[in-house]
Length: 312
Image (spheres, rainbow, N blue to C red):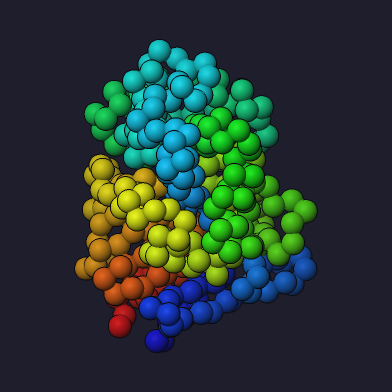
């Protein structure tokens, strides 16, 4: 399969057990001249919500929590307006909580005490009653990560490492800051290096995971083959619970579900400062697509995704 000029990063398209496209282009780090390769770990941004949803469902399978638990069971100090909100509402973006734009005083790149971050969230009233609408909310996924920590009695980063990444053989993946880690890409915006957003606290659960392309393929294959979650939990994750307020797709637990290139699809895009990412699983044709770039203004990404999903 031919591809157009590639982005700065890596693209991987699998169909069945065959890799139809696997290409890396450009530099992972301008300062060292390190090229992007299969070893390069990229911020996957909001694709991290896939893993947060899986963490919740794993704990639900083990009886440690229930998706219909109120958020104030797991997150202390919730204001009265949050008391009707359940983990299901957070998972499906139907809680009424805002996205980053509703918290203009929050610096996404700045370190902040976890309790102060929750205080910032609590200070903004919900946009609507739980279940009465749909509004994409990364802060809602930060709350889900806090719930995972409480229910699992360990850090969210450790839970993902031990209960999500290790069972799927995702040896290059981790959550949190990339400082001091090997083979991490440097983020760029408009071709220039940019500092990372805070991934330890502000984006925990919402956009905090780093992966290689191979690891993201392993993640998609794990969903396809129910290797991590039970088939019932996978079905629960990919159920269309609410229509998204943009585009034509609906939202499940941590993923968009609908049609791509005329086929059923499960996927997510991601955009952190300096990075863009996209994954899709198309079960009817058994295709899985991974696109990773460490330049958030790379002009090729959307054209490339459309090309790969519409070309036989």
